[in-house]
Image 1 (cartoon, rainbow, N blue to C red):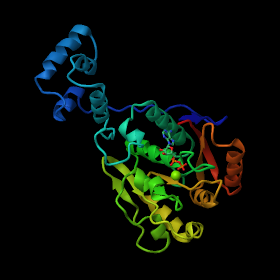
Image 2: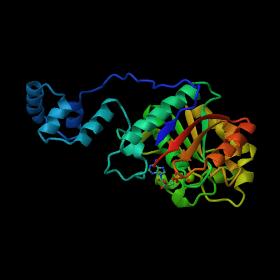
Image 3: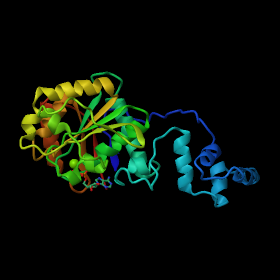
Image 4: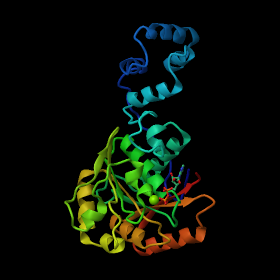
Length: 299
Ligand SMILES: Nc1ncnc2c1ncn2[C@@H]1O[C@H](COP(=O)(O)OP(=O)(O)O)[C@@H](O)[C@H]1O
Ligand SMILES: [Mg+2]
């Protein structure tokens, strides 16, 4: 995945300076990956070879690179799921492999979106993720972006507004959530304005699943209760990301994006047709939606 830079907009990364809370050694002892008596031999190698603590521990075959990444994530208070943890889908690469190239790209995209849209203004908390066709990776990118925003400590809500997707392609499946009422039943007036469930292991992330597929998605998305729901979400969260059905097939994405005011365009490398993406962008802009950026998904 690479992010596509729109000409003329301010770009760059926003480095975060975080103070380490604990040493890597303390964290690895606390989580049982190292024994207290290992520390001395690691320190000896570290001093003799002039290498970092983690590298010395790996050289002694006491821990793996993964253990170090895990400890680093804890040191910087970074939510990270262990590869053994199967509570969400392995497709949430940002959660399982935050230090992979995909994780890096997602964080770069997060920085760009922060420069261009999420600037702390209460009217700029909602971003709708759109793309021309099925399979472009909207759901993948929305889910992983939500994870990286939450990892930064931002209260993040992912709303699955693709009321047309089969269960296996839904955010409910990606986050392996139990069957629950979702957006469709809220819009249909059944149940209150409950804003989804928090994701285990990813402290700042909430997900509102799409719920059962309704017969009239577009009509539901046009109801005023959707605005109420978004206003409530904006009171409780810093970042709200909305997943949508393919923009080339339905008008749903335009209706949804118009509510939040901004969209991120996803295009799949070698697959998304440029004219289709252009046509969708033009329709969004005609509807008053700000196109905050475009991502070329080259999975
Ligand atoms: N960057 C990527 N890396 C790995 N797999 C990806 C990537 N983008 C999409 N996929 C996979 O491609 C498939 C279709 O993506 P999905 O997000 O469901 O598409 P959409 O929501 O646009 O219909 C899914 O299985 C998804 O996990
Ligand atoms: Mg999808």
